[in-house]
Image 1 (cartoon, rainbow, N blue to C red):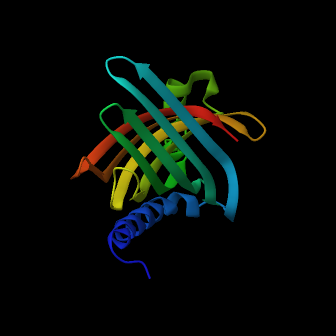
Image 2: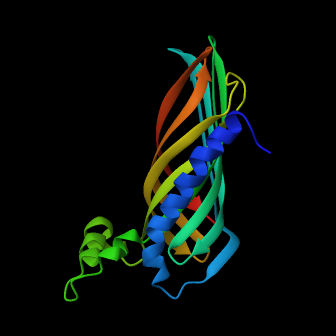
Image 3: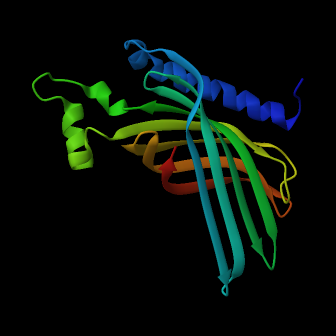
Length: 206
């Protein structure tokens, strides 16, 4: 049985993720879709390393890795691990988090009307130009927990969202661009608070 702060994080996360899946399941259920459990791919691994020698002298490392846990039509559920570390002469903090990331792929296609000039086709051509037919735009939600680590003594909840687009470039390979926002609880210098993080991610997905 899970108790304490971890149970609080799960209590926030599970209804949040299930709610999003139920909200977008309507469009997907109209399709002749099959449930694919643990397809694994696409897999993502994003790494950012920054080191500065003056004003201030610090080092930052960011890692985000994930896989696809479930797929049903244009819906997919991804599982992701994120690590973020800052080291300066004054302080050190490491942040480990795990979260579920349900996504609604091709959400623009819900606007497939009117018949003569569908709105979704207009939006695709405006945003993606000659790549309109290859683009896979998506909306996502984020729900998970921040784990105890150096500088963070307690588990906290993590919620957020994202919008992005994936461009398949070869069999099993795609280029992905996304804008991601998260809000999470964390301890820093013996003070508990809510942190907000805005991240632009780009990378290759396998």
